[in-house]
Image 1 (cartoon, one colour):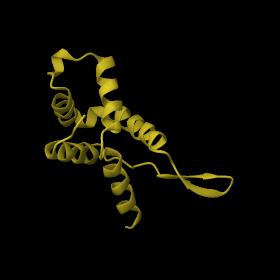
Image 2: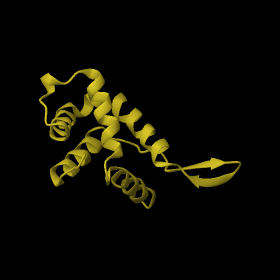
Image 3: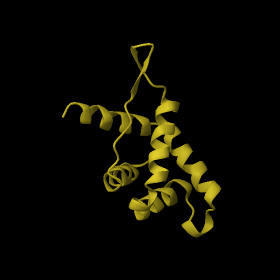
Length: 107
């Protein structure tokens, strides 16, 4: 899956409309701070997206239509969830969310 520049803007709009508070990209293990794996971090973000999907319905639909090449009427719920998971495996998506997470830490 390759994302275009318009998809980046849709991701940004989705994150904004959902007022996403990103999970910490680090965790503690026996008192030591370590980076979460992309899979762990991605699962947490997917959970946030699913819980708040209603807040950004239109940009979410547009993004899913862009990445699948299908209209919303042609997708079922299982396919939608699979595509959301695949979206986070796409090159650059996790970096987008981690950079947003890191920039929010600096504020």
